[in-house]
Length: 209
Ligand SMILES: Cc1cc2nc3c(=O)[nH]c(=O)nc-3n(C[C@H](O)[C@H](O)[C@H](O)COP(=O)(O)O)c2cc1C
Image (tube, rainbow, N blue to C red; front, side, top):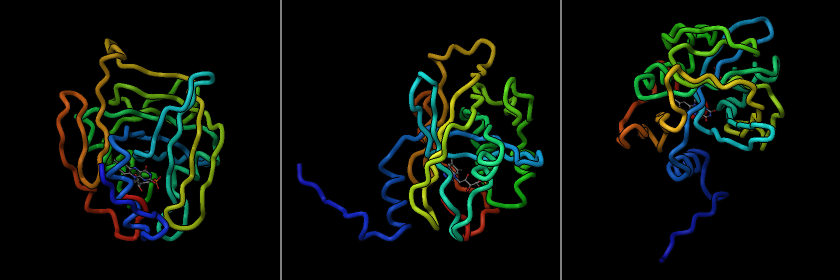
């Protein structure tokens, strides 16, 4: 098989994102709820998300830096408090998840914008989203920064403390949505593709799309 070989160092940031986000697919989506040190709640989606191991049970996600080099609110919160919840989303929650990905207005209103309902978690302080069929309560293990400035990676590695499953949900039948490149998503329930643009409120100065 012949190949076209691209040297990543020769591509600009946008081209790298377009390339890799179309190739490393489908990506599961972590809808992460967190609190800052003063108790203000936030919720935002991250598709740079993976399972890492089981002993201890470990997951990782990466909020990349904003284009101005600043950190995403979720990253600041997790660093401040050491706790968060990874909520997992099915097709019926795609639009709510997308709304939570809006880059403004102020982050403490994200729960309201998404329309999701916060309910108490069992061990950690941040709430989980009642509508999500699965939620994983996590305690921060480590943040690994790779690079600095715009779009640099911040791998947030956490230990899963509690898994909440909707009553009647058989974990082997869980069918979440996953992100493909651009506006494309995969609904693993039936294997259908669908499209969803980022919400209009997102300013062009925002970081990862
Ligand atoms: C489906 C989806 C997946 C996303 N994945 C990521 C991601 O993996 N990393 C990232 O930095 N931003 C990602 N974003 C964008 C963030 O959700 C967005 O920048 C959000 O405003 C960050 O919120 P925060 O600053 O309140 O933490 C994604 C957005 C959507 C809709």
